Every structure is written in structure tokens, then in C-alpha cells.
Length: 316
Image (cartoon, rainbow, N blue to C red):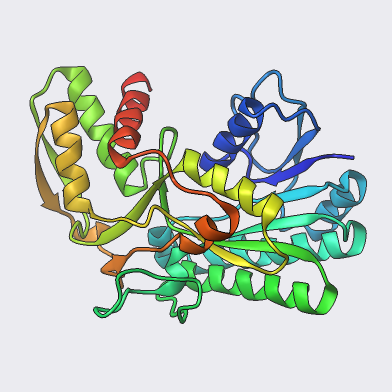
């Protein structure tokens, strides 16, 4: 039996997930599926890739029928909130429709498979002035096309747990960062410009930004994948967990830390095109449920994440 089927394995989180499985001594077969193969899958990992557009329900179903994995880690998504404002239809199809195709295929051909469905903190909306952080029992109030799509994905998961008894566990994952993330995401994009200045020997730079007053809960991607493993192997069917650091940090503070680490002074300039029609001012989560029930805690501090991202961009 295939141990893992990982959708979106060629993406940011997927590449770190494969590295995690390699580093923890996974010996079972791992199959990646999607339209983008990982560039550097660990050589000692028993890995193979299936090229399949997950919107193609028939081809996906045929693949699931052949693979019948023990675990399915569903990472494939169009994960940019900003892009969802420009391409709301693509955001919806590449989140909700893909997940529906996946659970339908598993229902038909591999109902014993346990599925990890990755959601987003964006499902919560903005934190109220009376609250310190979001917990899993808080009301969901999505405010972007991406957030609505991710909320819909979670609702589909709950329906398939209740009505078809599929074994699905779910997350609401907060802003993850780390080496290898695309520059269209704020922290990675800022880090790339600081790294470029360092490589060029510049002592200052002008940083184009959107709204940098927002406060976010940043968590290192390597902590994220360890949390996903804990949830995948230990959570009760149908449960949802926040995956977060529990600490709110303003983007202005992230820029200041990058400046401090790199030794490069920055001046920020707001660009209208980088501003969103709607933004959640404060998004911070509590990982108390995940910690108390499964024993997971984040271990990589923000400063270490930023140093590693800078090193990545200096080398790339």
C-alpha cells in the first residue's frame, strides 16, 4: 500500500513535507500528484510523481483507484489572497472544486484513506477588539474570495465526514513562512529585496509595500509540516485545528527585523496596486487545542525563520 499521497507536492509546503518525511525516516512509498513535480525530492525517499490536473475528475479517480493510499495530504491550492481578488473564479475552482473531486474519488475507490484538508486563518475574518486570538470555536466570517473558497472546502469536508463517514481531519493554517516561498508573498518578497541588497553590497533600499500595518501570526513552514503530521496521525475524525505560532507581529516589525539582520536600511513606499479591496487588520491564532490534545508546539522563532529566508534568497 502507498503510505502517502500528497497533492501539490511541488509547491512551497509540499517540498518541505517531503523533506520532513525523509528526515524522519519514512520508508513507505510516497506518491505526489498534481501539475507541478517537486524540483528536488529527497533521493532516499521512495517517491514517484503522477502528472494529473486535479480538476480532471476522471483521471484523478483512476489514479486514486490505483494508488489507494493510507494517508492523503491535500496541499494543492491557489493560496494567494491577493490573487483571489484578481482571479476569483480560479481561486474558487483551484480550492473548492479540486477538493470535491478528491474526496469523491476517495469515497468511491479508497474510503479507508485518511485525508488531511488544509484550510486557512482567512476563514475567520478579522479579530475583534475584544479578543486576543482566534480559537477553533469562533465564528467564521471570510472576507475574500480565497477565504470563502477555503471555508467551502472545510464545509465539504464536514459533509463527507457526516454523510459518507470519510476519515477527514482539517486545519485552519495561519501565515506560514520559510525558505523557498514564492516572492509574491509579503515576507518572502521583502526578504528577497533585502538579500539582493546584501549581495550587491548596498546599505539601503526602497521597499514597495501594500498595507504593512496589519498584524499577522507568522509560523515557520517546518513547524507547519510537523503539526500536519501530528494531526494526520493523531486527531479524531472531523476535528479542526489551528496551526499557528500564537504570536501577532506587524509587517512593519518584520521589515525592521529584516533590516536589523541584514544591516540594510529600508525606506517603504506604499503602492496602490499592492493594496487589497478588503484586509483583516489583526489575525492571530491560539494553538492551545493542538498543544493540549496532540502535544505539538512551534519551536522555530521568527528571527530564525527570517535568517533562513534571507540565506535562501542570497543563494538564489
